[in-house]
Structure formats: C-alpha cells, structure tokens
Length: 127
Image: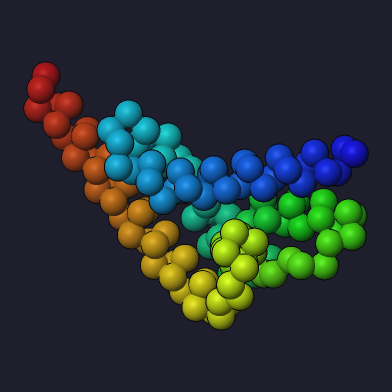
C-alpha cells in the first residue's frame, strides 16, 4: 500500500516538476522558482551525473526503486521515455527521446537565465 502511494506520488510530482521545467520560464511570477528548478535539474544531470551517469535524476532513481519493489519491470533509463511510453503507448527510440529532452532542457535553461536577467535589469531601471 505504502509503495503504491509512493509510485503515484512520484508519477505526479516528477511529471509536474518536468512540465514546470518546460513552461515555468514563460511566466514572470514563476521565473525565479523556475531558475531554481532548472538549476537543480542541471546539477543532478551534469554534476551528480559525473558519478552516476549522465542525465542522472534523483526522482527517477527513487521512483525506479519503488517500482522495482512493486515488481514493475518497465523502467527505462529515461523518465521522459517512460512517460511518453505510458501516456501514448508509443515506444520511441530512447536515444532520440534523450536528445530531444536535452535540446528542450537547454532551450528552457537559456530562456530562464535570459529572462531572469532581463527582469532584474528592468527592476533596477525602474528604481
């Protein structure tokens, strides 16, 4: 029972976190929080990933541990690949999904940094 709830929690939390990383930079009110989440993701992928493998994600790792305890054997290396497969039933090439994920991540990271800097400059000019 407890692990089933954890499985649902991770599915919802990780999916919402991922969607926020994709769209959070678009809204002025969420840009600072978005910058934090995108930098946390970058830290996990590129810094912690030095030891655990490129693209390492805490949420994915923990979710996969829960799913393994529940007896699921459907984990892929990429949470995005897993999510697309579960939501659409289409098993896209995992390397293609990882490349597209990286491109979208880099774009969103750039937009977040650029717009946060622009917001700071605008705030300073208003003073």
